[in-house]
Image (cartoon, rainbow, N blue to C red):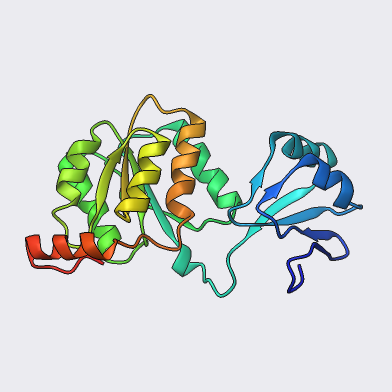
Length: 216
């Protein structure tokens, strides 16, 4: 990809600069390439995905320029194993998102697990996280007692988007079971698509006044 955002070609690699990749794009641009490199947030249409599989083309995603893997690390956790969540995490990793596993619940109570998860986010182990649990309200109630945490319970994609946009939520607690793979994947993408959860100044000021700490 050149400085003007045009498609560039290596010997066997196609660099795609746009945010959407459609089947027509592949038919025009693929010419014996064995790999295509996409923007981290790029969306591949279903027909394009089928075309890539049929041609045996490897898909990779690149991090934004200047970003390091440590700066892009996101956390995920499960109160108990959910196969759909594990599949969504693997897909995120294939897309170039650097993820780290938050503490597992094990034999501890939900409140102690919530505290351990929140402390991982607060101490910088990851820049934000998403957990999948039976009782997101309880998890958020405990997590929000940890300085700097802005945990929000969500059950839909729209709720996740609103939480990250209006509050800069750095921990999403997703109610399980009942979510589809598509919902889990999109919620994960919503959290990880942001440059970093940032609390709006007005909200941060109010939170700071309430507990005497700066929430940033």
